[in-house]
Length: 226
Image 1 (tube, rainbow, N blue to C red):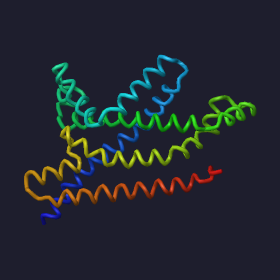
Image 2: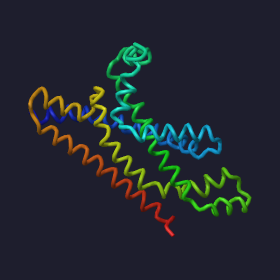
Image 3: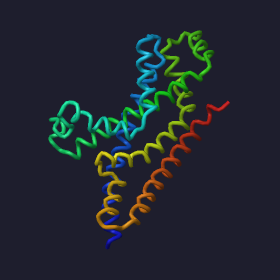
Image 4: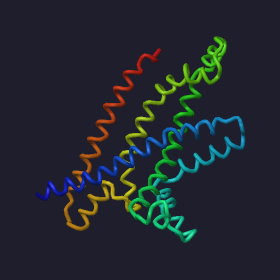
């Protein structure tokens, strides 16, 4: 019975882990593209600000960023996230949204550098060839360049995605009750350590599924290989 009770508690925490993971990906992937365009902008102030912001986020620990996003409002403005009207005074929702904001910003910055590298590695001649055929810059990018960029960045994106699965455990530091938080609570309150190893199985299975999906996707895009 103990095993079943622990499994149910871990599944509940894993649900929150999946929600944090999926929400981060859905928001960080397009935001990363915005940052990438800002980094490549011909407007120097915009390029400088974007690259500087990305540099700071990539150069500091995600754990520190979590602490700042969740706790700084309360320290500086004497108005913590839990008292913001949009969260309805719900502590769990407030801390989850704060953690999500930190994850989205962090991973958007990493994705932006992956996007930028993928776009800049496309030979300039392909842009010129498209324009010679009468295509606009927008048409060239979306009809000629984009799929090739996607193929080039798939491997690093998959690595970051798998890292994100494991990084969700950091949300425990700001009291988000994801799966690692639950297993650590079981260790602290009931003095049983095996749920920690059981938690590792959840992460391993999740990452195995993601690896299989990315491998299949990479094979489907193999026609871009020269």
